[in-house]
Image (cartoon, one colour):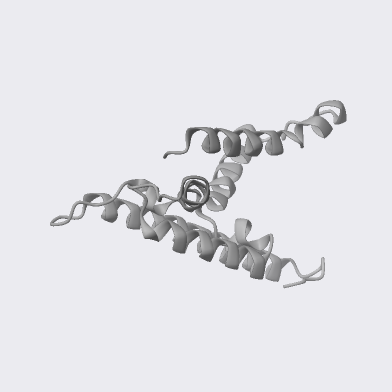
Length: 151
């Protein structure tokens, strides 16, 4: 939805709808995880059944050793495929509009702006190198997952 700068009411309404959707997704994800863990009658699989990264690790183990990780849940493969598909279709809006972590990020950002009022600034000398930190963290996670080969 592209709005003109003069259409402040529509912009506020759009932001409110987005925030409501994010909160609903966060609540749904949290309730689903709690119900999964505390359901009676069946022994639930681990919380990693909600993590698509388990499928990446299991696929890597399958390719390198020919065996699946024993405690991996099939739901991780479904979640991985769904995450990739939604991210391809909706591109960057996936993290900002659908992902529960995006919802937490948004809520903590709003909370931080209420608490600190003045937004801290980072100098370009620190900002430019720090932007590559996320890739270093991703690389470390992938390498350690490959080395460990288990959840």
